[in-house]
Picture 1 (tube, rainbow, N blue to C red):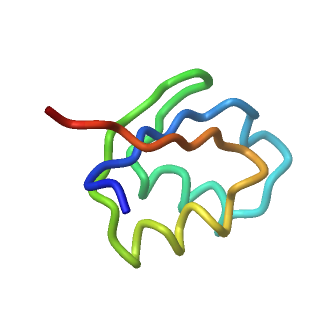
Picture 2 (picture 1 turned 90 degrees about the horizontal axis):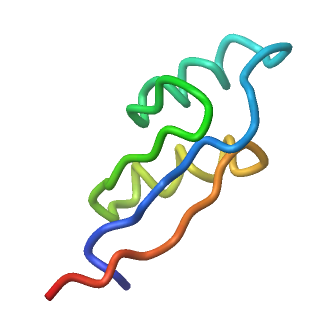
Length: 63
């Protein structure tokens, strides 16, 4: 697996339930088309899976 993942919010959290909104915020995403690089851990993968319909995820090649 890659050491980092690039996560981008591509769909709005408007009209989503509270847990999904908080999961997106927990990933560090603040607004539409905002992207962050996160460590590839089991916890992050679980959070991504819960809101995968709102995100784009791609591995980051380091080096």
